[in-house]
Image: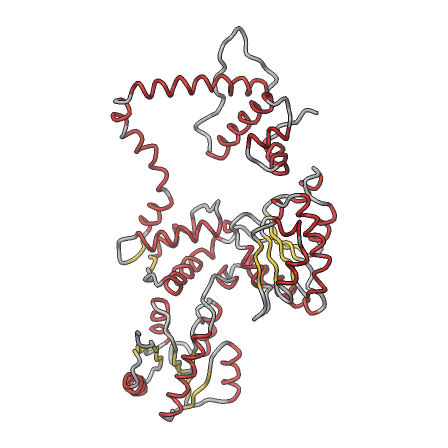
Length: 467
């Protein structure tokens, strides 16, 4: 078994080396840091099992460094504060921030070893590090979000009450939901919605005194919506906080008959908008470092530093996939970048890696030409299908083909992928609507969609359904 790693932070070389010699004799691996700057660098590249942190240092005092680690979600290991001028007030402040214990200098040998041993046992019981709301940022919009969540959490002593989180997919709604969870209480993220329809009260029994999180409630069927409403009305009895999230316009869905009116009213009592990542890009550099550090702690993947240009590149990029996309990009950069540091070239390589697909296809042109007969057959089949799709396009526009001429596929290929996909989906549904004579049950079966989803998709595409 690998020896436990202890970081000793003290500006006095004599004390650092004395503590190192004692702890190494006990079989521990010891790293020394002469000031807060060195301690920051050491913590960023490795998670020590215990930190012995001096309070009085010239560049930054230990209390400030402890608070900095806590605010940046880096206080994931036991920290024992040391001081030759300790006071009760200082010890209380350190403990409040998150220090495990406090040692006064000169430190007795037995007291040192006993405290380190207790800290190591405590560290083994700490939960694994994970992304939290603390990591989301320090921008004004995120600080305001935290303040509102604090206010909601503070009111839970009277009645937990449901909370609705509104924001784009991948924006970090789950982090907000977990922020409302009290320490050492149950947590359940519901992924199988069927139980809402069949046994909603059984869910409350399993999560008593905890938090139930349901993501994208716009996906619930009518029966599941009614089950959720029943669950919410009974949640007080079980002291359960129900937190739901959505990226959809629920009032619009309710007006269209796709979302339960009473459920919307129950959820609207306490609702918060979670900002998209593009709304607080100034937080992206800190987020990138936090995600990289989590990879070190959770997966043992070596921490990689970002140069300034790389961090600026990430901050200036567009993030349609929001926080989830940023997380994937950082993981990719850490595992595929070759240099000592992650550079702007690395960022551009990952952000634009799919842009080269068309170039690769062009370079493979000769190999496709060798398969000419296959290409011609595929082209014939495509034009045959194009006749159907073209007819559907004209039908959608109130037009019809003339004199047996085959209409062209009316999709502009130089537009963004999302708009091109919408054009295709309009053609697809127009074709099948005509084929099934507007029978929505048959259309749902052909498209492989639940009827509620199908109606919403048709509304989104602007396709009117004839009665």
